[in-house]
Length: 118
Image (cartoon, rainbow, N blue to C red; front, side, top):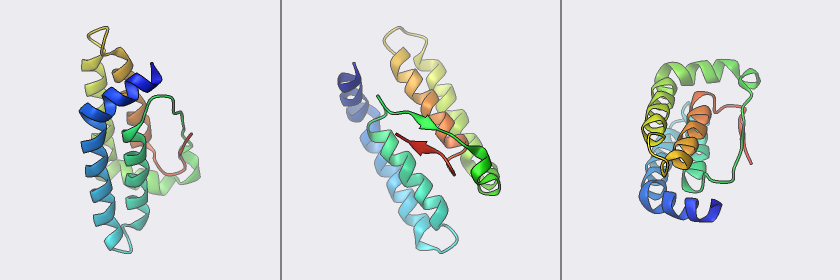
């Protein structure tokens, strides 16, 4: 299921979303202040391509100020968007695995600083 799920995700959602996050990260990395936030968008882009079979270890306490700043300026809305899409996908039996991946992305979008994807 992991390989098939990743292929379906990549074709329907992953490629275009990863490209968007990648270009957003590039735009943020143009400024010196935005470099840490751009690298977190690169982390989201990498998970967006192949989310099945990967785990996220979140640690909000590693960088609490950066995570709080992230939450205030877009991270909360992004996480809420992933969560709502995950709920919609979980309505059908076929969508449940994809909804779980949206919940995983939501966790990463809440506190990307100090989180690791493995």
